[in-house]
Structure formats: C-alpha cells, structure tokens
Image (cartoon, one colour):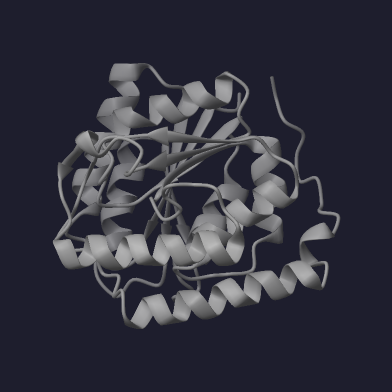
Length: 252
C-alpha cells in the first residue's frame, strides 16, 4: 500500500548531517505514528552521503536513496524527490532540520483542513525562532523577501523557508511546471501554485539557524534575482499555463 506521507530531503555533500537527520526523521515517524516514506536525493555528492543513506535504507525500508547523475541544484533535487514520491501528502525539508521534524504536523494539519500547499514561515511568529540568524543574514534575507514579493507579487512573509508540504495532486502539477533548478526555485513554485489557483496556507513553525548554511546572500542573491525575472518571463510566455501529465491519481 502507498504511504500517507512522502518526506523529501535534498542532499549535497551532507555526510556531516544526513545521519543525524535520518535518525531524527525516523524517530519522529515512530513517535507520531506517521505512515511515511523518506526519500533522500543525492545531488552528485563527492563525500560519503550516499553510503550513509544506503546504510539506513538497508535497515529500514521506509528510507530510499535517489541519485542525480550530476550536481543539478536544490530545486532539481526537490523536484526529483517530489515526483518520485507516492504519498498523498508530499513535503521537503533541509538536511539540517532547521525546523524540527515534528513541526511537519502543522503543515499536514493545514492540508487536512483544506490547503493544497502549506509553507513553513520563520517570520509569522518570530518568538518561535530558537537560534536567530546573524543580523546581516536577517537584513539580506528580509530585503530579498521584500524584492521577491514586489516582483512576484507573492503575499507571504517567508518564501524561502525549506519546509513545505503539498497535496499530491497539486505537487504533480506544480513540480512538472517548475523550471528553476537551484536556490531560486522556492518563489517559482509558490508563483506557480498561485497562478494555478491552489489554496496556500502559510504556517508559523519553530526554526533555528544553522551556521553551516551554504547560501551566499550576495552571490546567490544576485542569481536568484535573475531567476525571478526568468519566472516572470515564463509566465508571460504561457509556460505555466501548459497542461501537465497526470502521473498518478491522488489516493484517498
């Protein structure tokens, strides 16, 4: 039988964190009694990430490893995992588990109550942040979010939190239309979801900053701004209006 939930974890050179992440995720599955599968998408890692995941998969059939042939980016990895998932509700989380795994219940609850997409937010309730970002990261992050909202017309306090869940039928449409393969994919999938008329619920979640975050707000921020313009161009040219293949019917 197909699981109720699919949890996707994109991973690139995550040997220092992926073992702890899988341990925490599997513990949460047991404690919350979630019927779930865990898909780790290895994005061309050159370290022992794949071997660590395989060791977990050998012991627990809920864990699966998906391999990108080369490094393609977080956006591609999330899409690869989502489209290979079989849960009625599919979600993705970062390997650092900045939002603790039990917080996913808040996303699942939003979907059970009618949302098609539930997105975790660090800024709706700032008091839920356990470890705050350095001030310069907060400044650049909020500036990028403001620019994103202006260009994309996205009415959300936090577009970049790597903690999002989708009703399966919505996910199949959104991620087949997704074109951005690296850091800027979050605003694109939210833009597509709004464009296609899906109900999106922004949910405050507990979150703690990880100092090992790889994103550079200067280098990656400039690239993401280019990608925002690319998304607007895709919208103007009708890319997001295309029909998509119904890979599988939603199960009840």
